[in-house]
Image 1 (cartoon, one colour):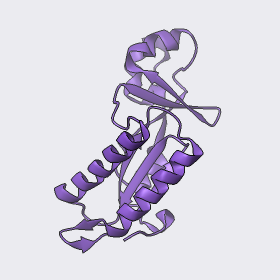
Image 2 (cartoon, helix red, strand yellow):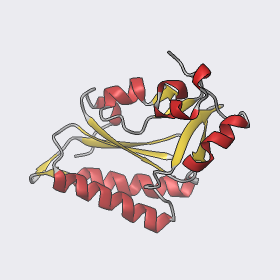
Image 3 (cartoon, one colour):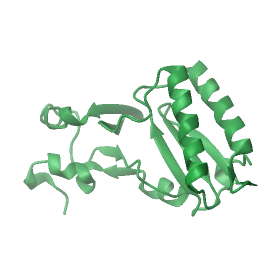
Length: 164
């Protein structure tokens, strides 16, 4: 059952899907319509779940549920995201792209380019990186954006710049 995102408690589960590019306005409308329909009928073991979604930074879908989503209910959400991606020509499952927040915009860098782009000054230990592995709405608010030097990206930084 769809509910406003802000009404979900801090312990509600979230799944973040990062797109390989920014959404157009018409794509945002398509995504919103599709996910609104999906969350209206999303169920766990036949029972409706309080669920919601947000489109963040024109490049992320944040799907959330206030109940214990099971394997089948999670599978149905993944299937919905895959279908949206196919329909819109967007890859939501490219784990080779790292997203940074720079000047209130999203900048994505391929993992293979991290060292080169660091050396070119495109990001540093203080750059904000999206931690798409947060699992609750509370973590989303307080841990989605982290300094690169405090994330798994620290292995790409020269040892003298890594935050202690």
